[in-house]
Image 1 (spheres, rainbow, N blue to C red):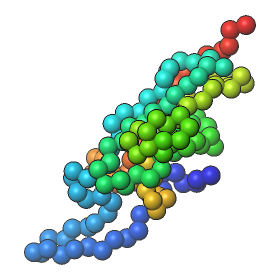
Image 2 (tube, helix red, strand yellow):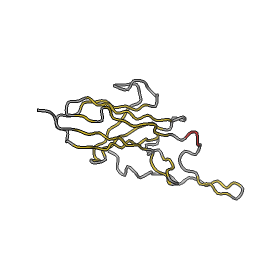
Image 3 (cartoon, rainbow, N blue to C red):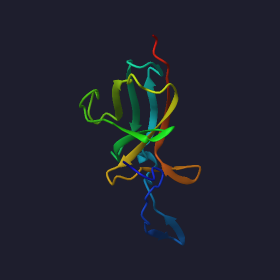
Image 4 (cartoon, rainbow, N blue to C red):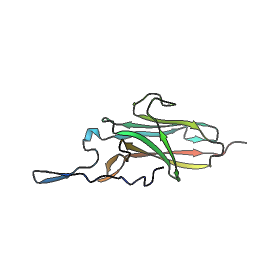
Amino acid sequence: MITGLFGLGLRSLPALTVASLVVILSGCNTLSGVPSIVRAEVQPATVKPGDSIRIEVEVKDKHAIVSRMQGEVKEDPQRLFALRDDGEGQDTKAKDGIWTLSGVIPEKAPVGTFHLVFTAYSGKKIPVPVRRDGHATPLSAEAVVTVQAAQP
């Protein structure tokens, strides 16, 4: 189980002095090489116990920085799950940038709307940092799934 999901765990990296300009290096600095999440979706978005479900998170990752994709149920952070991009199980093709998880909604699944947060991790087992609004933040995306009561 991962604790401190949003703790970036960034190491202090050296500063480069270039013509009196100090640039602090952190995370991925090549604009074209910064990984991004293109889409995150749950199909179908509304399910009942016993229904099949498929989750896909598509990542654009030119330099293969992302080595793991983890999902978390925002309403219950103890519920963590791993998505795959290794061509095994329900993942169609290895290393295609589409991280997947398929399964069946359990019969005793709680009813409600749930927000699934997907976070990309590097080979160093830390969240991949990206810049958003001038701040380093984990590369993540969210999708919503609604679980309805089973029909009697």
